[in-house]
Length: 507
Image (tube, rainbow, N blue to C red; front, side, top):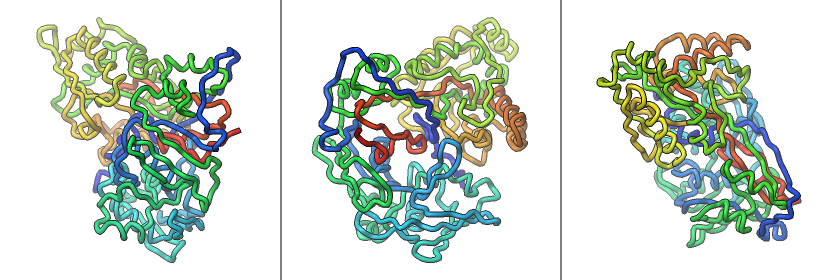
């Protein structure tokens, strides 16, 4: 069977797939104000992007910046909400049958070209995801039977191997539907990119890409839902987005924790904190032959590290220290795990038991993505701390997530978001999913996941999943948003790693 989860981390890396919203909005009374855009007067919204886009193809885009724009333009059938329920987007209705198949009815929705969204468009979209960085694990996992233009049935040939409807929903919600006839006019091979053109069904249509990288979207007048803002401007900011917001070039910006309190003091600025169902952790490779396959070594690493210090560095003081692999937003969460407070003597004792010493240190390779400087800084702290014990650490910065799945490292820093149902975390221990990055194969953890029936059994699985130290939790991230006080900010869709700007409006 194809390992259908291996690309999940590309989408999950910083913001996670699902988020819970714990927000607070504040207005100051300090007399300090920032310059503003003309957004309220012209009913527009200006936000930042940090790199030039190269495509609007919803299956074959390569960057998160492109995805931020694409999700305003294209839509999926369903979205997963924070509580694990499914919200219908292009699906008018769906029925899960006793045999596990699912019958769908499509909404009366139109593409931007004016064509109606049809069942054949869904089937075509699934046919062209083989090379998608985001949803390729779905390829071959779903078979579509078209009943008529608005009715179709999905069957799941690998459902008995953990690839049924609910298992695949984290991917399904990221499959944005393409107009088959429109696409086939432009590409012969479904795996060819559609380029800077689009025919989505979303609230906004592509208007222009300026030479300087700015992108403009216009509201789709025949949208099947509602959207208040007429025009979205994505401004390419090559400097600091926080400064661009404070100088009045943007209506919305994401802030670092260290500067969030400063911008919160402005009278004409509102702020909000988004607590995300995501955990950043260090992978410890449990494959035979690696030093970290020895539980004593993993324990020594845990004792040699100050988790609180790592959390502060890795999150720029914006995260909450994590002691459990589960997040506080999952059902039945409890912090009942071993905390491993810093104890260098204990670390050295365990390393001695495992056969190491000052003259015979364990050599570890620690990988981290170069795109995240806070993570790189965290790894430098990890190296410094571990080398106080019987370790030598080599940090290797990598450009993307591919190497995390290859297993040729001892430690790796990464983050992931799963559903608010803790049972979904079993993917991190199941070799069939492709997400068992630690290569942990001892059966007791999976057996504990399989036994989840109630609060007690879920909390037992949480404890075992964390205490095995295949993954060393570091922090739960939070995101700090500042926006014009005259703006009604929208909901943060963790499944989309951002906002759907159709939900925004001016007061």
